[in-house]
Amino acid sequence: MHLKDTYRHKGLRRQLVEEIQKKGISDEAILFAIGALPRHFFLEKAFEEWAYQDKAFPIGNEQTISQPYTVAYQTTLLNVQKHDRILEVGTGSGYQAAILALLGARVYTVERQEDLYHSAKLLLETLKINTISCFHRDGYKGLPEYATFHKILVTAGAIEVPRALLTQLAVGGCLVIPVGKGTQRMMRITRKGESTFQEEVFDKFRFVPFLKGLK
Ligand code: SAH
Image 1 (spheres, helix red, strand yellow):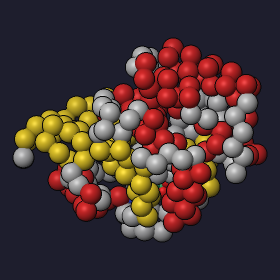
Image 2 (cartoon, helix red, strand yellow):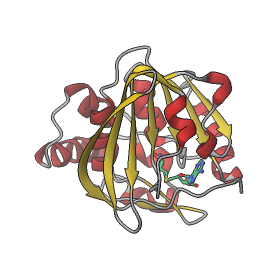
Image 3 (cartoon, rainbow, N blue to C red):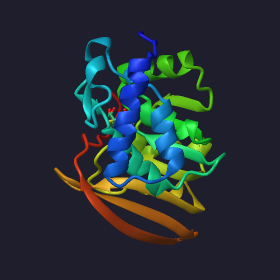
């Protein structure tokens, strides 16, 4: 691991924050978290130079760390409150989970690929972000033993909305999930009552696929 955060990195991070602000992200706490968290810790050393571009980037196993703008966009829709219990599906590098933790949430994150699960868990432990629990699980099933959650965030492109995730949502809570084949529409589904859900549809994105089963 290469956990050195220099003035240069900090400067690049400030520019990144300005860039996503120009693209329409205005939540101060989210911009602060992105400015504070060294994204280069979540990429391989060789790709450090790419860490502060507003782009998705390969993290191995055919997966990507989401574009910072997308992280900020999904996080905005979640409307994170301190002490929210949040389930994230698709740990990947662990970057999005760390942003949620910096906003004061208690984070449960699940990843289907064992290698990614192990490396993200090790990194988050090394960074001493101890309000995140990592699990090697199929997010299609959610995390029933820790339900319910105030918020659920899916960071892979789903073809359908998994029922299990809706049932693990607290009343008043919401699920943010990109839905669609190829490209996805960002959706927010709010649980209004035991069996009433409200759907909202937002912009188009392109995520790696939400796959069933463990790997
Ligand atoms: N949130 C990540 C982005 C990860 S990309 C980050 O900040 O870096 C999406 C991730 O979802 C991939 O790592 C992929 O392996 C994972 N994924 C896909 N289907 C899944 C499933 N059914 N359960 C858990 N994780 C899944």
